[in-house]
Length: 191
Image (cartoon, rainbow, N blue to C red):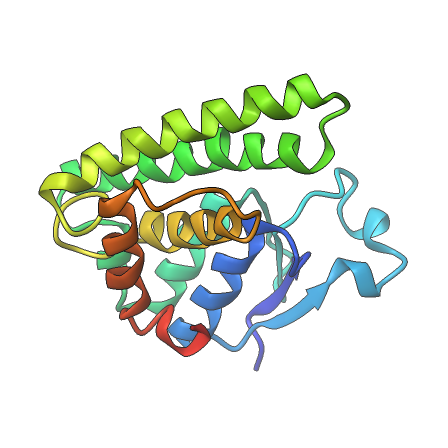
């Protein structure tokens, strides 16, 4: 029996990592791409994705909340959120940075109204990437030596930026990091 329905827009960077996670966890969840239905506004008034609707009527918006819930449903992948209290806090912080900083600026690159706004977003993105590159100088993954959902999200977000033909050659630690993330079974099938 299915646990519920996950509504996504498979083209959004905020959704691709959630889809990979569902498949990795092996959860029996129906996936609906909101671009293929006409009544999503009736299902969730805010029209945001991802959005989980359980078979029991449980409703859960917001990517990080959905990710945490899905991991908890799986019962045996809690380490994806971090092992210790500090790792869990760091995982949340990195996830938030990707969600609120990188993805926001990515949106400006795609739909900014002026070239000035796009140039500003590009400069800010490079500042964020320098910050991440510096952090990765002493560790394999964002919180240390363990892969977490913040790595899954960061990997997908940074790879999306790669697709915009940004210059990534100078971010040697990020390039190494992307390779390390790509070896994790949550990501490897999609590379």
